Every structure is written in structure tokens, then in C-alpha cells.
Image (cartoon, rainbow over all chains, first blue to last red; front, side, top):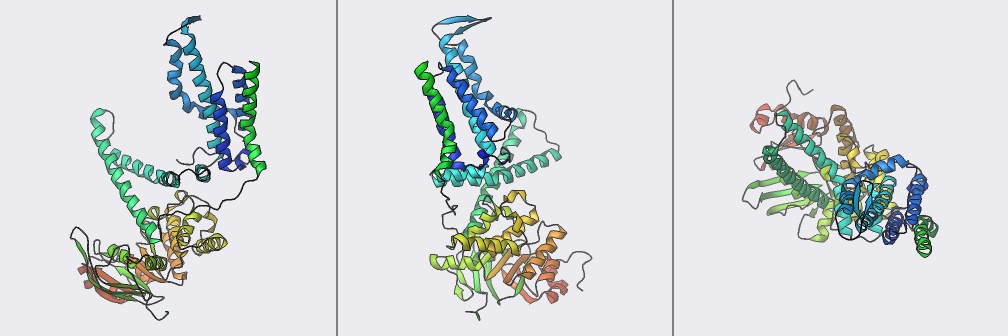
Length: 250
Length: 248
């Protein structure tokens, strides 16, 4: 866990500094979201941009689409939208659909998918650690970055602990199958919480012993040339051009 | 400076806020360059004693000196200096290694002491080299084996160039090879070592001198060999040599 999303390759996308990539993704998503769905050719353009960056990052379209499946539970309601609502209705095959609902649903699915796809590219080409560094450089409050990096460090330790507790339960003939077992699970969760809390205390003690006084070391900031920025920002820029072009001609 | 003992404890007593008294007047003197085993049963107050050495626990009665400097947890400036002189390696390396990579973790201590840039890099490289973990510098700690993590934990305190290295159960949970490798590393270091352990053969192997802490006081202080040969003394304080182990 932690770094399982990252796929190690050598590519132009991998080598971009993380904060540059984060900015590019955010801007791209912003452009996508602000383009009305009725200019649908623009969305084809966006998708081509996403696939192009994915290929530039040496991620196959198959991997990309598989990872984007995480979106499915979230767009569930969007799929229902054409069936409920008010206003103009029309027939589509066996279905009787609401026009506004259909548009809103398609808009959520299209924009959501593009957002998820670009996030997948970011997380596949950047280690979680690098993303945190990037966020730190983008001036996300340091305390949030610290909390996230502690989480990243200890999530494996705690999930291992959880697994060991589960095995110990199983070894004594306990198998959670229904509601009546929730009490045991809840007790284990409480025990895990207490253990993690105590570990937190011990970690803090160990940090104090090495002279910790409230400030974590931050990494040296290497400045990024504007050519790098240009490379990364070309994607949202193209998106913006596409968006404006179809809006003017649409 | 150099003629001060690395560690000097005078009549140290301590009770936890809940009234549970852990130490009843401990006296201990460890000279520079010595390797001393601190033996004692569970609950003897070993960890409490260790946490007094760098001022995590405030002294209630008695005094602790590190290389002649008094440990005073109220004096911020001095406590910073004390913590750079006393390197504590805790029992669970996962408690100690919390930074995303091995290298950053080793840099944590010296960074807190104000070291930056190329000097910091050099210190990190040296410390990792001392424990034979140089090639793991950029790896996250959870990808290492337990023995490797323990070695990195040792490096994290060596990077602070301590006057005295305090190890809490250094051999616990190590496989025989890791145990031996760690022993080789510890022997190669030119630093005062206080080793808290129940692993009597390990104490015998590494330390010329041993003290027994039991019931909150030091009940024995002698050559490790003579202590381990005194079966009656060991037995009284819930210590036993492993079956089949004889001192050569």
C-alpha cells in the first residue's frame, strides 16, 4: 500500500517535477469543467489530449482505463439522472428520458471521467511521496503535508498490524460472517486504535530524542526552468484553445 | 572535557505521576569508550532510566550528567545539546524511522541540530556506511527487513555523532545473522555504549562490564563474566542464561 499506484518508467511525463504536474492537472480539470457539455467536439479533443499524455507517460490505454474504473460508484447517480426529473421528455429506444437530466448526466460522466483519467496519469507517473513534495512546494499548509506523509509512512505498519490481528482471530476459530460478529470487529478496531495511538506517542518520543522541536526538515528547493513549465502547461493550454475554438464556432 | 565520564548518574529517583515509583536512587558511572550492559527483568525501570539520560523524563531527585553537562529538561538550549550527545536506539525501529526514505530519516537528527546542505549529505552518507546500508538511502523504510531497519535506526542516531549510544534491546527480533552483523557493527564503533538487554549471551559478547537494575536500584556492577557466572545473583533478579549456554 502507499506506493502501489506508481508505475516506474522513464518518460517525459515521469521526469516532470511533481508540483508542475499537479498545477497542469488542476488547470486542465478547470478548463474541462468550465466547458459546457453541449460543445461536445471539445470533449473529444480533451480525451485525445489525455490519451496523448498517457502515451507520452508510457502508460497503456488499457492500464489507464482499468484504473479509471474507480470512478464507477461515483457516477452511479449520474446514470440515473435522465430517468428522474422534470421538463421536456423524449423517446430513446425503449426508454423515455428527460432531456435536461440526460445532458446533466452526460456532463457529469464526461467531466468526471476526464478528471479521473488525468488524476490517474498523475498518480501513475508520480510517487505518492513526490506528490506530497509537490504540494509542499505549492504552499499547501505544512501541517497537512506532514499529516499526509506520516499517514503514508505508517499505513503499511498499521495495515500489517490489522492483518496480524485478523489472523490471530481466525486462528482462534473466529470468522466474521454477520452482524452478530460486529462487536468483536469493533473491539479489534478499538484495540488497533489504541495501539496506533501509543505508537504515535513512541514515535514522538523517538523524535524528541533526536532533537525535534516542531519543525520537520524540508527538502531543498530546486528551481524549475520555464521550459519545463511550458512543457507541462502545454496540455491545459491546448485544452483551453480547444474549448474556446468550439465555443466560438459552436 | 575529555576526562569527564560519558554518563554519570547520582542518586536518581523517579515516580510516575500515578504514584508508581520506578527508580529508588540509581548510581551509575560509565567512562568514555566503555560498553556497558544494563541488565534487568521486565519492569525493573530500565526504560525509565534510559529516558532520563536525555531529559525526556524530568529528574525528580538526583542528577544525570552527560560528558560533564547536567541534564536539565527545563533548559531548552542545554537539552538540545544533550539530545545530540545521547543517541537512543529504540526497540521497535518502526517507532524510530518515520520519514519517507532512509536517507531523510538519517538526516532528521542532524537537521534538528542545525546542519544543512552538503555537510548534512556527508553526515548521512557516513552514518549509513558505518552500518553497511549505503545502497538503501533512497528506499522507504517499510521495504527493508527488520534487521536492516534496526541498522538504519542505529545510523539515525550515529548521524548525530553521539557521545553515548543507548540501545534498548538491540538483539530483539533479529535472526542469528542479523544479530551477529549488528554485533560486528557495534564493536566497530568508537563510541560509549549502554545496552539495555535480557539477552545475556549478547551482553557477554559485546560488553566487558554489566550492571543489573532491579526494583529500581543498581544491585550489581561488575565484569560481565563474573555477573553471568553468579547464578544465584541472576536467579534473584529473574535473569537466566539460555539452556546449554556456558561461558567459555
